[in-house]
Image 1 (cartoon, rainbow, N blue to C red):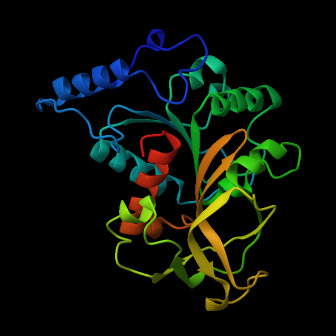
Image 2: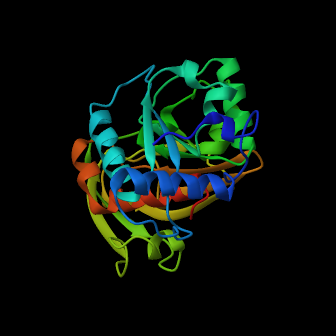
Length: 270
């Protein structure tokens, strides 16, 4: 399903695309699939367009294809379209304006040049959002683009060996939790992944799931710290999921639900 770019304003469509675009997109989807059209609920991602960036200029996670497959499966399930790219040239005003949200899927290193960074800042400033998965906090960490660190909410510092850890649901009443079947009714859970320690944490972060640093070995931090959060800054908003190093994580119902909630937040469909 493709939406003509002419239906959008000259630069960016704003925080939400016009209602008529969403209705037209849903009607197009219905016609293509043969299903009868029903108005989408407010929380639906139906009709949205999502750009997934997985360019790496540092360590490359072998799980990127698994993450792409998970996002494609969720797109089919939720009724939105997803475009995968590793081409930084797509980060220009005209192209970004076609998308309702951007995902950084295990991106690493310096992936955008100054002009592309400026375009992405304008895109986010126009009311769009970013979903960052795992190594998104290990992206643009050379210190030259502090805006990005403020947006994603923290900067990767180090990590110990892959191992199981205890994760704690911070607020059972939060809409991310209540909207995630896999998280309802549980206070904590254990899962194996690569657990980052962070630096330069944003004051605007709202922790959704915290990691218990005493539940595994090798962390340089203490106590509990956010590992899944949403972040609101003067420049825009982002949702970050610290899980996602290995293929197996993307098969987890919890990861599935967190991606859905992160996309809703990034696309302002929550």
